Amino acid sequence: LKPLSMLVFIALIGIAFSQNLEVFANHIHHVIFLVIFHNIFAFILGFYTAKSFGLNYQDTKTIAMETGIQNGGLGLLLIFGFFDGLGGMALLAAFWGIWDVFSGIALASYWGKKRNIKILIK
Image 1 (cartoon, helix red, strand yellow):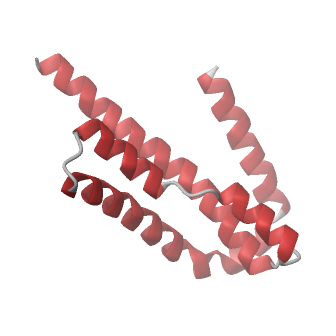
Image 2 (cartoon, helix red, strand yellow):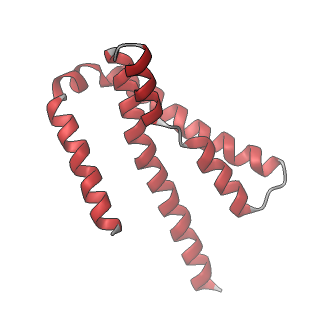
C-alpha cells in the first residue's frame, strides 16, 4: 500500500505542476531557498530544543519532526479562503507542502536506516 500511495501522490504533484509549469518556473526562485532554509532550521531547532530539555532520543526525533513539518494544506486553504488565492502566496504554500513531504520522508528514512544499522551492529 505504501508504494501505491507514493505513486498516487507523485502523480498528483505531476498533474499540478504540468498545469502550472509556467507560473512555477517564473516564480519558484523567489521561494525555494526560503522554504528549504526555514524547514531545515525548524528540524534542527526542534531537535536541539528537545535535547536541551533532556528528552530521550525517540522523543527528541518526534519533536524535531513536529517542529519541522508544517501544514501546507492548511496554508493553501487560508490563502484561498481569505486572500483570494494570491499567486505568490499560493506558490509558497504549495511548494512548502511538497517540500515538507519530501524532507519528512528523507529524514524519517535516514533515522530509520540509522536505527536498523545500530540493531545489526548489536
